[in-house]
Length: 498
Image (cartoon, rainbow, N blue to C red; front, side, top):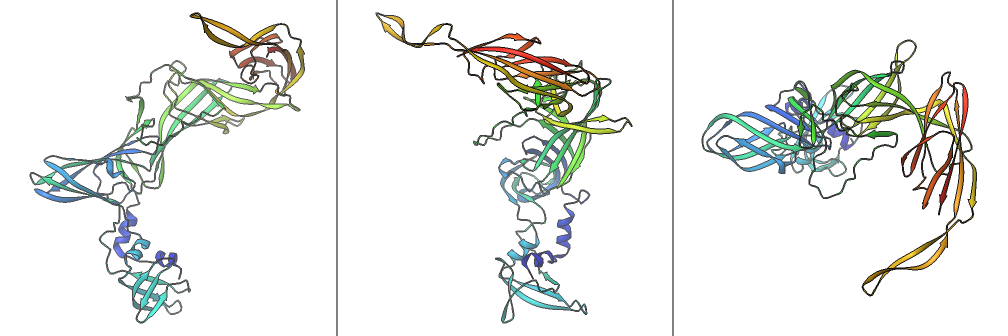
């Protein structure tokens, strides 16, 4: 029988049942009054206050049901009249594989069942090795337990003392008195995390969205936290590790103009706190969702937009971006700071059924911010960018270049090493908009690369069919209205010198 099959069939009685029971939320727990603070960087703070009988003098007390991913060096222990001397964390958990490994050199009982008759035979076997398979000695013969189709169980006489059915922290302390009293432990652990998810129902006719915010908790600590007072922190406190982790990059399909309003939520340093309204049990290997935001009638609008690279000369039209814009400001109806997460948009069809229309991600967003989130590509609205004409204009002037400074007689003098001609280029871009919708649409077209892409010394717009808005040195945006079931051509001429 294969090693994995043997281990899967291993029986270890009530202790195994107890170990499995720890994975269920309703199982008995040694935990006390729990408070859990969860951060965004796979880190959580657990504070556990238990009522314990502490003997006078030196004694050892065990704390089962702590996180299997506890950071022991972060442990803090406090009990009135008692001081900690030593602590140990036993994380070698009771599993079939560990039982077999710890039984090397010991004798166990193998029970084989005859599939035809159901009769059982028992043999005492000494475990010799578990490397690549289970090797045992039965009497004078050596046998490898293999997959021969016969049901086999391994029965152990006892559980090794250093194996635990659940993660256990033990503390050796010295107390100046005996008696029952509260004792608290506090530690950091990995394996607990949370993220925000948003559900937004968009009403195009009213120009509003109804938004719900959900917190998604995940627990991979190996331990269930029972009836915990839970607080979520939007932010990632430094872990003290020296390795550099780059900040997450905001996706190109998300535009955010940061706000300057302070949310009414409690702040801890530079982070916002999102406490859950009631105590909750965070089961191991579980994902849990809890509502933290529910707002109706937030002003929103649809935006069609596209950004064009410099000298784009497209053979065919390209669908523009379809996006939804809204604000997290108080006067616009949302009025909250938004933790990083995913926003999923829905819109009702003719039968009134909400249908999914796209999603996008946001970073931690202060209250009062303006957000524009792409939901997809517009089916009926397209733009084609073409270089209609590009010509070189003869040099109009000479420019002094390659300057350097020298000191002569205590004065700074600028010397000229060479001169060169300045070339001008005149470029006319043609943007062709098409709209197959039965209503006019507005498209925000942004021409990028005017400065950074050209590496030009200077540029200017000498002619444009639609007045543009200079966003920055590199970008200029045109707000173009395209007629229903129609087409519109916009030309813009730029001049740049090198």
